[in-house]
Length: 477
Image 1 (cartoon, rainbow, N blue to C red):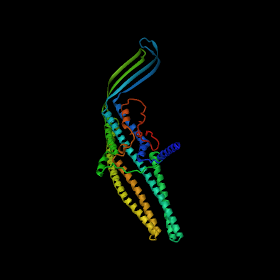
Image 2: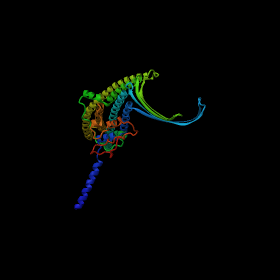
Image 3: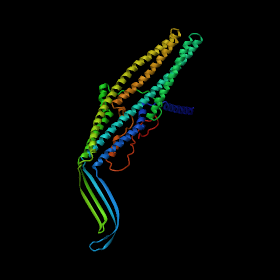
Image 4: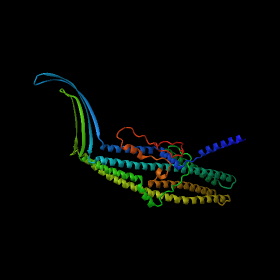
């Protein structure tokens, strides 16, 4: 008997574990973590940032010497006659030459300093662009997640509505058989059922579209989704939101792009200024002449280059760079205005959705009460079948509108978070190790040579103690 109880208990425990894993509903946070880990757009953005990091050592190369070596061999065969002795000599020698040169720039009109500053500003701009991309991808994931949740809820409502109308049609036909209602009532019930079937098909089509969107962003089909909730940690006023939005990644990227364009003016202008180089060379030549066995030499000196006229291209580059500065300055203003408009728009949508939810919940309660009342009155002949059908349609419509308004409130709260520049893994508090943009920059900045690229940092993974809802924890690179 004890063995039976033990086996029964083990079987029950196994069933509970299997059931709990099957019924586990994926949360929005888990979906966002999967997106941050595996989205290819984010991986491409991180690769672009690592490519931008290489601009800094390229600029720093201007401070470093260049060393070149050259070698040559030349065979000489011929004859010569002395004008003094009249003696004829045969010439047959092989001249071999080996040399090396070192050139160190001492002054380049400020081009190296400006180029380094430009490269660093471009790296900072690309980091901000990566944050902006992270916000957009995460917002797409939130959009997809909430859309799937909404469309599934609407489909459930449409299926329930179809079942209710199917029962209503059957009840109407039964009453028609005993002469309680007319043929017109049956036709009205059939028409409403047909509309309900059309609503079901439309809901299925919408769900298929949102599911495909989810698969594109997240990388896998959606499982069972938990109901999402709107963000609570948001600015209390529109003025506060506008103030925080000044640090939006789009604005920051435009700010650093402007700084890089200003540096580019200095880089272009440096071509009009003198440059000074330290040049050192050494050479050894075997059999340079018939009378010499070998010769070696070494030299060191300064080389000053003063541009006088170079065809006018350098002046055009300076003028173009100044126009680029004007363009970047206007881009910054446009980015600021766009962000402020996004803040105001998201704020208004959030307020409207919140107010709509309050009204729609009241409407659903009222329509539910109205339907029950109309059904009771229909039983005693005080209401027609059409009245019941209308009441059911109004209840269905109000429930669908409520689901859509709830989704709109959730999405608007995250859109406001994105508009103020805080829709990031850090701003959302996602339990995932974040991409370290500084790591590759530190490694790359002072590399003197080598073609090997640093492997993508394997540090984007779930935090300890969390398991993937998709059963994976892959690198985002």
